[in-house]
Image (cartoon, rainbow, N blue to C red; front, top):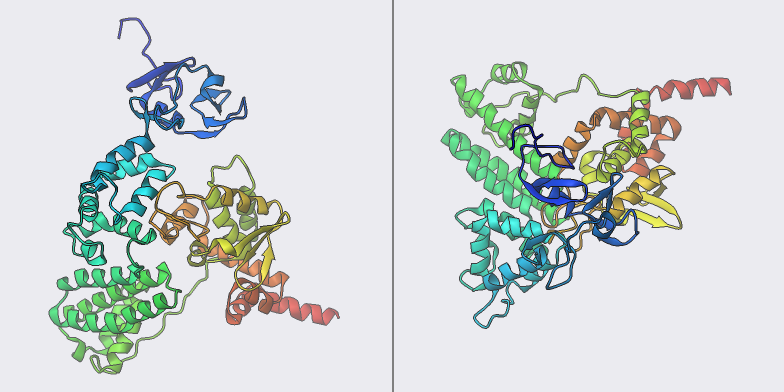
Length: 483
C-alpha cells in the first residue's frame, strides 16, 4: 500500500483486510461478496427479467446490464447465466465433467447402476454444493466410483460395512431417495448401532441386561412404529434417552455396592432424590426388570410435573404480531412453523412431520388439516403459509426427489430435524412449551374442549385439562348463573 493512500476497501462489505476479486462500477469487490453476488438469481429490480443478479442499485439486486457490469456470465457450453467455476464454464458443466469419468463404464457411458444419481446431481439447482461435497468427502467419491464400476455391490451392507460408515451415510440416503436402494428404517438401524457402541463401557452383566431390555422393548417398538409408518424422530430420541438413563441407574446401583438382584428401595429413593428429574425415565426399565425378576419388587413412582410453563396471552400476541412484520429477521419456514405453534398449539414433533397435502390453497383460501377437519387460516396469516410454500427450503439439491414434507430437511428424503427447528424458534425468542400451552388455553376458552381436541388432534383429557387450567370451569359456572 502506498504511504498516505487510504486502504482499498470492498464496496459491498467495506472490509479492507480481504482479497479482491474484481472491480465493478460501484467499486472494488472482495472475493466473498463476489461469490455471494454471482449466486443470486431472481427478477431484476430494474428491467424485470429473470436473470443472474450480481449488481446492486439502491440496495436492490439487478442484472449485469442494468448495473453496467462489463462481464458476460453466460456459460460458453450450456448458456446458463451463473457464477463461472472454470474459464467459461458454470458449476453444472464442471460437475458433469467431474462425474462423467468417475461414473462412466469402459465405453464412456454412465453406468446404469448409478445413472439416476448422476442425473439428479447434474440437474440439481445448486450444482456447486455437489462439487463441494464430493471434493471434501473422498470416501464418498471413492465409494461412488466403486459402485459405478461394479467393484462393490449396490446394497445396504456396502454402506453399513464401510470402514467409515458415517462419511458415506449421506450417499446411502441419496441412493435410497433415488430408488437405487430399497427403503430402510434408518432410525431403527441407528438405534441398534448406537446401542452396540454404548454398551461396552458398562459393567458386563449390566450391559447384557440393558441389551435385553432395549431390544425387547425399544427396538421392537421402533420397528412396529416404522412398519406402520408412524415412527417419528422423537421416538428414536426417547428410546436413546431412556436407555442412557437406565444405564446410569445401574451404575448408581453398582456404586452403592449392590447389584440389580440385590437393589433396595433405599437405593431407588436415593437415585430419585439426588439427581435431575430426567432420572425418572429409568422407571420403564425398572418396572420391566421387576416383571422379569432381574430386580426385587420395589416402588418406582411416576414423576409428577410441579409446574406447567405458560407465557401470557400478551406475550403470545406479540409473537404473533412479529410473524406479519416484513422487517423482522425471520425466514419463511420459521414464520410458518411459529404460526402453527402459536395459532394452533401444535407441538414441534408434529409440525416437522407435516406433509404438503395437509395444506391446501383453493380459491384464495388456505386451509390446514391436523385431522379430517380442514381449518381456514385467516388473513394476513395465510400469506405466511403461501410464502413458505413458494420458497420451500432444501429443494435445490438432489437430496429431495419429490418431497412430501411441508418442512424438508437437509438429509435426503427426510423432513427437518426437530432439534433444528427447535433451535431456530428458540433463537427467535419463543418459549416453545409456554407458547403452546398459552395457545391451547386461548383455544379452549373460545371453543368447546371436545371441538378443539377433534380439530387439532389432541385427546379429550388434554383439552379438558387446559380448559380447567385456563379457568374456563369457573366461566361456565358464572355463565349458567347469569342465565
